[in-house]
Image (tube, rainbow, N blue to C red; front, side, top):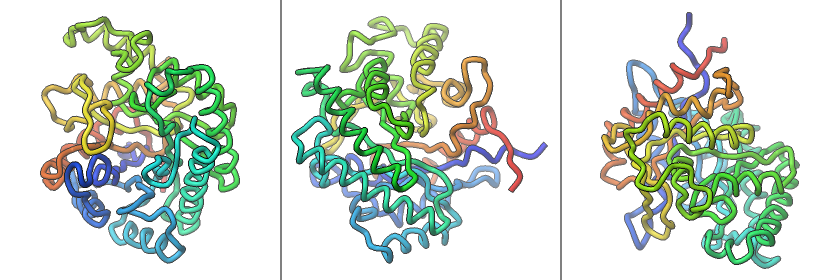
Length: 349
């Protein structure tokens, strides 16, 4: 029986950018992130690709054809493919709040359009066989809470407009379930927002570090599943909680980040606090990475969905000294290989 070769194993480039900057550590260049990814190897297995942050300093959202081809060439030179793209929809990067003024919402949609153009060109260049465009609401939960019903309608309308634009380029949009984004900061709230969008090309981007925080009700106490002062040694209760969240969100899931979390929140630079991304071997990690990934990659009967063609490791806000160590990426790759061994499949080339 051949080794599983799907889902493809990707690293994320954006940990070199997110949480970095003048009020934190310097960004790590895309060339360095690609090099670190390409050099990782465990028992002869290497990363298949990386997911890309479509914003400076990694890839200018206004890149011309030459700039996009240059990025494709960088990937191809290291025998890597490119997967999902993050659209820079935030105010500081040219976007705006999805529930803001008409101008802010137009800016949001414009950034999605630019990311979709890049995504399609990378597909046409043959370097991006799968992947989606990742978005969030670009607004905090406190602002959303001032008018949950009205603000959810606004976010859904903005997402709907963005979906219609994305459809013109053959792209789907994945809304990230992260507790720092309004309208997406609780698991039930996230489902409500997705349902309100009502477009076939909207979906959910699950990140194991972020979705674990859904169980604890951070920023959405009324959606807490695990009791306060939860005893993390109670694996059975944790598993049931994970099953509850994944049952609600798995049908929407079109993009998946493998990650570890120690049950706390963390933020660095200008990034609000959200689920802490821990190293793959962190002894304080609360997840059994390989086993718990199965809640997302298998249906309620334990059958592989095969919907997710590539999985991505997200190590956002890792310190630079951690990211510059080859062992970090070998440990991550090792964890992802275990996920694929348990929940993957083989397709003939």
